[in-house]
Length: 500
Image (cartoon, rainbow, N blue to C red):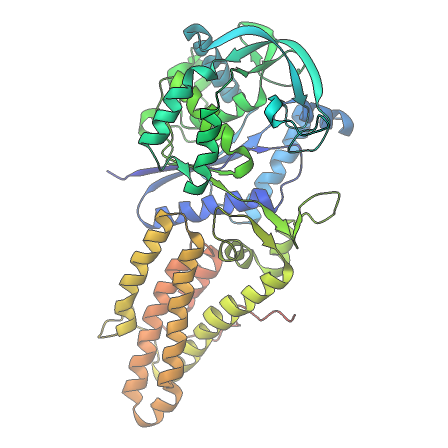
């Protein structure tokens, strides 16, 4: 039986156009999904858009359109960017999909019945940008939100609460018994200490926000956008067939979602998220799943943020990197691979054009591209047609097994930079072989010896092309085409150098 692998990005809040930060998480998932497919897994890769809340309601009003019209526009922009960036997602969910709304309502009613949700009232400090209440310990001096640095609003309203406090000890026990759940490990203490400090019940409805999913048994309340959004992971996995009474609603399902048996797909293998939403995914979400008596995801991995030339990306500074524009100028694959070579995945990184150009020229043009051109040019003169299978006593071809094991181990740790380090290092060894053996000179005195050197280079670069495919799917396929059996054609450079 083929093993399933369920991987998710966070669904992106459609109140702004997608930028480099959104692309980073999604490309990371795409790399992992493509690698797992290579290894024979039946992958389900989920992404989508988060489309409810007061901020979207305000933005739509400012644009003179309805909230649904506004979310249709921005959600389409995400889909278009994923197409440009060659994202191989299987499912795309929108929280305005009817099926998802029914699932959220069913989850809410189930937790209301079990006592995990109860009606109360709330008075406290609220960030309109975050769309969440903040504890006194989180508030900055001057009554400011720690994220947006904006003044908080005093809010008093009737609300339903989720009994998050009930799951303080179960969560700590789960973290202890499943140390891989909170990843990377250096972020685990932040979450553990937060839970140990004491969990407060969470307000999960709003009476003053109309653009949201109404509570089925009390439509004066709409469901808090974050509670709604987190449930998307089980909606897309098919939990609606278990929870929802309206069976007719599930005949069509979601347009872009393949529904199988929920228990065959859940739990997710990994939720990939930015560090700013780690707490939602590692505290609130597992507590909700515990309340529903559903298994928890195997891992939640929180990566760092990207700055630009040392500055935080912001519209005010005008330094937001548009990944589509970057890809249009330099190619999609060089952009994809740069993001995961420059910085260890999980840590914060800084984007600069100087670094991008240096990496492009050294890693791609000089190392990968130049090697391929030199090899094929020499092979055209000394090998002729390339054979389908290349076997022989080739040391570097034998070494490929060790390199592949190191690559597999690096993927297991989500160390994408280490994967690329292995690939580029191996390619450097191949370049060294060319420089040491000098097949162009060897051909004058030992044509067969030169041919064997070139065959080893061809066989090894076929490995490199396969290893690069998750990062650079288009370029890798072009490499495979050039290295394929048959007559060698003349080709343009794979990576023309960028003039600084």
